[in-house]
Image (cartoon, helix red, strand yellow):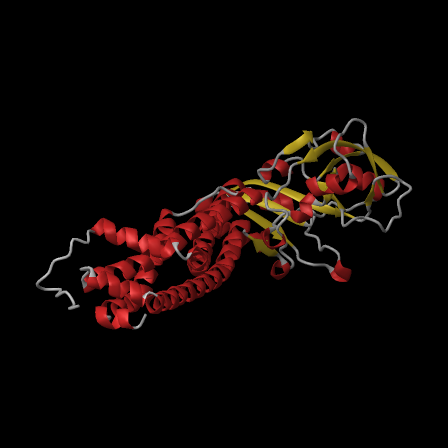
Length: 410
């Protein structure tokens, strides 16, 4: 038998036939195909998920900043002696409100008494909750909302009424306000409202900005002074200023809030803190992208290894096809197409897996689901490129086999 000449004899092996033989090569070894594509699936899935979760997290951050407002400033005197909150001067709120670009000012103070569900509970079992005095416009200043009931006003600030933060209500087991009371100091306070969380991400410790307020019970400064002799000095002032002059306001706030000790005044812009936390989280995104790339590389090596073994195992098939008229180009295309189909299946499964993980996690966190199209398209294209590179050498090796040598080796 003489080998057909690739030049003088043209084969009738059509493109559709190449696809058919390539597909049959994969379906005939289904388990090996699945295991080989798994590395590509994991690599592409990890990369799509990381990019999707990063974009979804960024979208959630933008939503939080939009809800919070970029013009909010938090002014405090830091930590006091003995671990307690340091206070600002009593007239600091009025002084800050006189700064021209300031639009609104609110404040909270500290009350040195625990809040308990009733007078039979041990005084030391506070559950991490605290009692604070609050200005009547606190919720408005923080763009917050009241979930049940109402917040303090001029009349309720002067009587034993209280409003619970979201976490405080949960830990006290209070869901309704119909005549419900809590024990503060040696006095009963009637609960008139429960707030929604000031921080939509309060379950995430790293991104919590107002967890101290969510864990607080708010009473009026008038009743706190009358019943507990609590000073009216605020511990934290919340300031909203015109966006165009925000840096100028930051510069003058320390001296305005506490002229005697401006160096001890801390001014924080919560939106900057959120952006800094997002920048820090990008380091982990890069790490996971690197791990995904490694998994993709391992998957490519796996495909190359499988294709080399396939060439060795199918020498008889290669020789028979060559004897029946298949050219070297046909053999080369067949094995290269097998590698491309293998990596393409793995890439498609990886894109679906990454998108599903992104949607599941983002929904669980209450984020908008954002999956960048370039991640989906790029992930599949990357899988195809890896498959082409991995399958190139085995395809060339298969095409170089002479028909007589391949048939003799069987």
